[in-house]
Length: 535
View 1: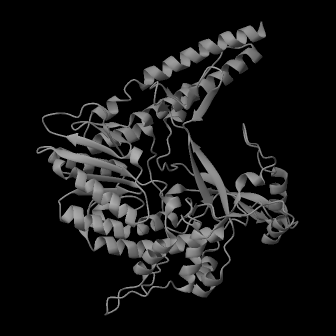
View 2 (view 1 turned 90 degrees about the vertical axis):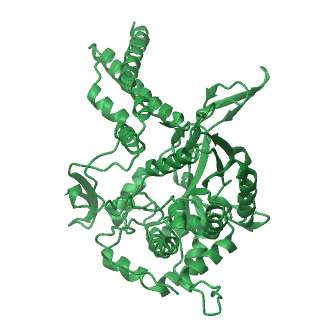
View 3 (view 1 turned 135 degrees about the vertical axis):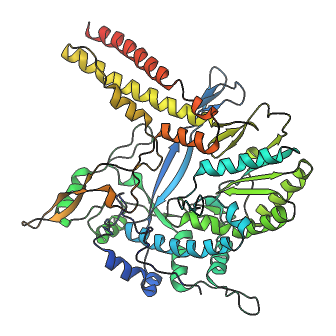
């Protein structure tokens, strides 16, 4: 078996996690020696009893066109005047979080598999270039910084421009319910193949070592509890209740633990008294468990590993044999081929995905034709957050609309507070524009702190009770420090420079005018509203 090259200096997988769970948080800096001792003890891992995962659902609102009226909305309406059916367009994504000790185990074995997986990909340049999700791929030999979706989109668009001289077809495929559909037997076989090198006879040992098998079972035959069960009150409609802060404070004060329970024994008592319910078998097919949970540190590499055989066969049969261009970003597949290859390529991909016991989503399969003498008309190709018409690239319109909606929503909230306070104090409404601009610019793009910040740690006092103690941390002392923050404006500038399309930054050239218009509108509207209330 190929062992993990354990390097204490390269411990990017070893991270603190901020969320509350069944058991206590682990401070990896203070417990580093203990963590290393546990993770390198394969007998400990083989016998470790994994705790139930914490289940939560992320609701992503979609501003989609109605299939009939073509009007965009968060909710589609249908039916007669007497009875109207509301169909939300929001996408619900179930996530599962492991306890902190379990997450450390998953992270360690994830790093182990990633190391072996990368060696396999690097043995074939085409394979290495084709798999672009959940990996750090250097921009160049001189620049080891990892590529982003901007770089991957540019590569695809450049390839289309090159092939458009003779005309080309772009096929877009989407794998249906990817994570929750993985076949456990096939996943285990892929895991075994990665760990064990073939023997002289060409055979591969078809078993997982006890420690790996225990981790495999924890990923596939998992139990979970609903996060909503831990709230003060469960609500099916409206805003969800919070947690029992009095109880959480008492646990911190008396036990020095940041968790929903003071110790595992208290959690077991809750289960015994039927105050909590443990669920299992969330993903099923033909009476058999399938799928892996999203949210675990190991989920991403397992998803890539599962499709390794599929990726290799696509490289051999389509890229090397038929000179196609192939890229896979998780469950999104892009293939560029000649126009006369379209039907054959589509059939091959569907057959190979079926062999992997997965299904291509037919309603998300799209075909685009590009020719240098005829810029794409109608619907643009959408790929990794960008749109492409054969000549110019643009940021995806839905993402741009989300940016403006967030900006206007921030303006609305601030204006409401300003006007309300002004009428209460009989003063003039005032909004801090600079603060508001900073607020609406923010977007989740791995932004990092620049100034020193404070962190809190539980410390035992002289009276035996635990209290928070603040400590100032300089971000420049952190390994993952990045000196410059990222926001939507800098993202647009980076995309413009990287892809080389001036059309991208032009998409937000009216942002200031829209900002001031929204602020003026809401101030005027709210002044009239509160004038009526206070009259």
